[in-house]
Figure 1 (cartoon, rainbow, N blue to C red):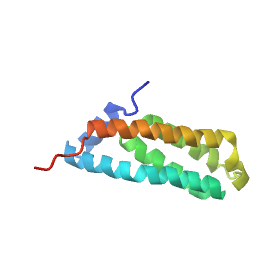
Figure 2 (cartoon, rainbow, N blue to C red):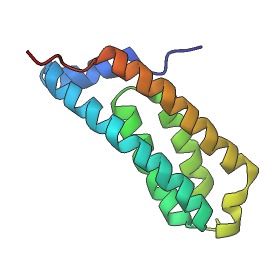
Figure 3 (cartoon, rainbow, N blue to C red):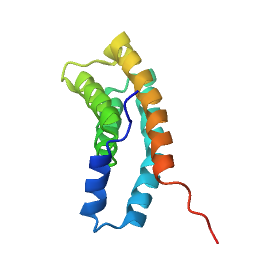
Length: 127
């Protein structure tokens, strides 16, 4: 199985913040806190037939995932965003099996991303 995190992207992020690994840890922790809610918003948006909620949540997940090196997850979210961004997307279209399957795969991929990031940034040990 390929890595869920692209180390080059993560290194670029760290370099872009002045090699402040502690700040990167905070960004990663925020991402790990926020991403499950975004995935839940996608699922609830599909259930509610709320195309805008699905599209907005997929867009945010795409951007946030890319910033921490979760490029596979970002690509999946981009695909979901594309599937739901067409002006002709109706609430009924959200029950499309392709959208449902993609949403399930996004949830599974996030589990891999979560595990890898937690491995790279283990909880700090308080003295």
